[in-house]
Image (tube, rainbow, N blue to C red; front, side, top):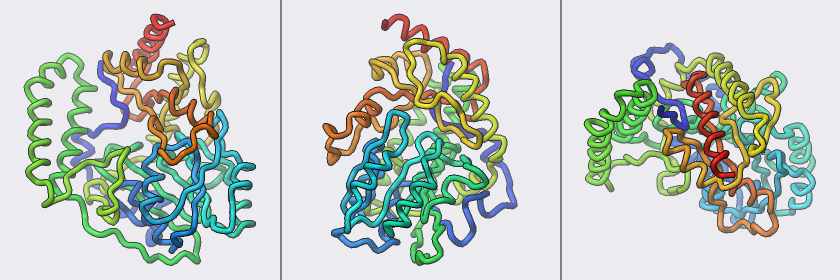
Length: 387
């Protein structure tokens, strides 16, 4: 069995039609700007706010690294604040870290679960600084009567984590006084878009056709991957063909916009169906694992309104376990495996623990109960051997 970490494209998605030209909330037309990836949007935020070189932005100690790189590349300093073992912002630490050069607090809604937005808004309002929401994990998540991304002065999104698109990020401006002086420039090449689309279609085939995918892997998939890599090499320097990396940030291409194909897929997505399916899958997999002694959950409850990105766990010998799962066709994800080198890790033991031990199990909208059961059974077997 093959289980992808992220949602995959089907032919129906590729050829779907939609009359919508703008995605659903919180992407208000006229105040949303679409970029090649979420990190580009983060870079654009700093430029949009006209922060000075001496200014700093408070960012969480637990992060994937690329968001920190984007802020630094935009020309300002970063100060880190702590999170607790449930991935909630340490509000007291944020208060302590704010100084006269602090211009914004950057907050991550980890895996779709909301931070204490009211308290954060109050802190930022009282200290006259911007509240930036990172909703890269939180597409379609809601709190009360609003979507995550509608609470901050400005918010960013990364569509690739939740939808089967080859590229796509967004910057949403909520505060009226922030000038709308940002504009993505250009689009990824057709080759770049085709590459991401084809690889996603192949992932879908591998997931749906268990018996045939090994033969396809040798006859079609590997040769096609070779051709795509070759096309990327010969096009280097002439067109943008790389797919977004979660680890690196290229400031030279920070203004690059989202492809028209990605926008079509995003507009056509049925947010309610995706929301319901992810919650159903999360609860099903959680119930399969909740009594296992080897599992520590970041979140034991799924609050109303949360659209979960993964089922994130904290386990021992994470890298070994992840490798064993991959051998059995399960592509689990790790968030924040490499923290930014500027982080003083000795001051943030919880961030270190999360980075070293988190394992994120897929629960996306492509998966069914048979695949989720297989994933739970394999994980139990792997962990029983390791104990």
